[in-house]
Length: 397
Image 1 (cartoon, one colour):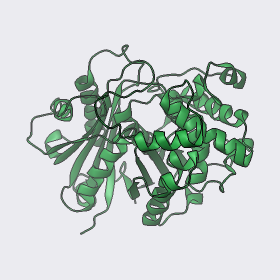
Image 2 (image 1 turned 90 degrees about the vertical axis):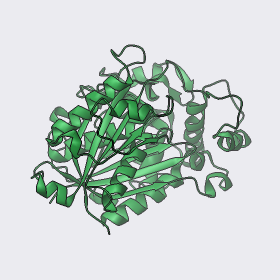
Image 3 (image 1 turned 90 degrees about the horizontal axis):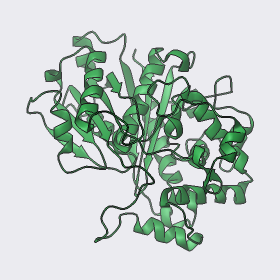
Image 4 (image 1 turned 60 degrees about the horizontal axis):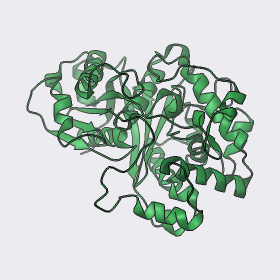
């Protein structure tokens, strides 16, 4: 049995610099969850299952977070899939509804992070990224830089060497996303910078400067997914947004056999996930009006243009030259929220914040960020180690 699936309620907290946000992860999850319930206009006791995503926390932190919404005894499953954790929780909630196992499921994600770059927490066991790091060292000499920007920066260098992109292309993406976030009250950063500011910022790993890198963040997000029957019974058609396609793909043999930093950071995972999600949606990438994609670093946004099929292989920088992915461009508008670079990146909440933004866009309620006439939206969320999740949305009909 396969049912149609709909987003009926979304919510998120403002994302903030670690250590500056009042409260703790249960408070933030409650805020986002209550916002999603209010958005849908339903009570928590109608939720039949919950999938709680986070990377940094003890076991059953998901239960502790969800209990702020109520103690109804429903199944609560904790989800940890690196940077794609939030969208992985959404994937599971959607599968529960699509498979007819629930009429209403909650995906909720949160993170309480530490300042500074991400690092390993368990030093007495195999690092789950060991194959990726080993493969990268075989391609490029390891430098004195944090691992994540070194991975994605290496992919950017490879693109420059193979296809002729330049540091200016990556800087423009950072400039664009910071400019978009000025109109996002939920964003960690709402400052506009000049292109020269982006280029002159502290270099983290060439070609990436600090203003082209996503920050660590605190915050939470929540999405309610429901069946067609539930939407009908509760008269939610005016605000419901349909999930028409979705795919989760993990690493494939070419991740390592290609001997490519671009493939190593998930380009082919993303490509496969996009093809599958678009096929289920019976939609072509050319029909997509607005995209939230995983710009953990500006290099990854450019690479993802190609992975999603917005540009041919090796031609992602041509979209930058044309300024196609911002307002007034040939489109689609990419990361109207400001993306991870400027909105922030609390790992467990990121995918759900992306889903929230796209829901608002398709409802036409994104205020100054609104992409006019948006009818089809695509979400891309990736975590190394690895998992890529692509979701396609359309306004309910």
